[in-house]
Image (cartoon, rainbow, N blue to C red; front, top):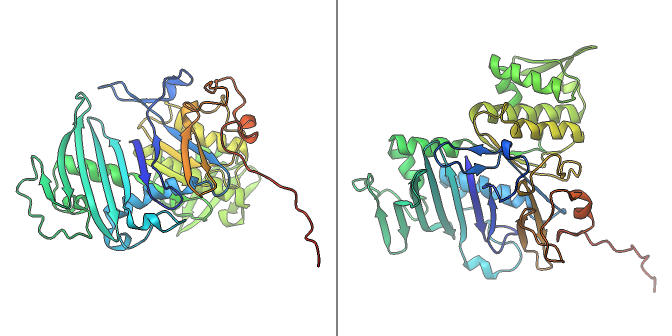
Length: 383
């Protein structure tokens, strides 16, 4: 389960952008929060990022996916330059990641700084949910490596400057502790929803329980589909009027199948789904139903989370999302992205956003700090 993520010096993100899934001090939809019985802390099941084109929404999700790839596939990922895109000054500074995630009993914080295809600093902390302080599992900086309790005897000589130490530890150490960390990281799934992909639906349809869940979601979610199945890698769907191959459906229906299938995989496994352009081609009610799959505790029984980017205004509403589940991206004249939640935003009069406001109307009017400046198109004068 994701608790918090921050990134610095990544694509359009120059200064630190932090996305927190911890509940804010607000009252709406308290029953939708994911709570651990040990500490009672509320974790958000959904976070939606809104903003203008080019504001950096996708960069936040891509940074999370990139950190996961640095750990799981460092050889393929470490050489990719993801530093701040505009200007050269930050080419000489590291890209920094900070990830906080938790299981049923413990919370982990992983910090990584990379520069010029090399690891500059790296630290892994751990704490029991019943404790308030973290223990250092390992700490790495230019002066050397400290290995905490349980790793003192580990031979780390094969680890080079191009390798995250966590990658090596996860490949070599198979204790319950590191098996949990490995599982939590693998549970993060990134999806670019603008790219058609039948893979999630095929995987779901090959499991009877998940296929039934997908069928119910599609039937209840307004797609008109009453059944779906897979035969030799091909998907077919049944409507009241008859049977069609999924390939014969419109783009919107195919998109709904792709997203609902990804949601089923997340919900049944308690996973984190990072969905870029999540409302791509979806009717607002179909998209809203997707969100409700995660915010309904009777459906989301394993603490799954959906983190997505969207332009869908009807779902930026106090009837659908908590204020701390609505995140705004803005980009200044220097091309730098800032990220903030509606729950903590202060308007020009110094007041916080009320839960009875029409969020999307205020957003479109630029009241929340993000605005698209339009100018008249004037015919160019001829000499």
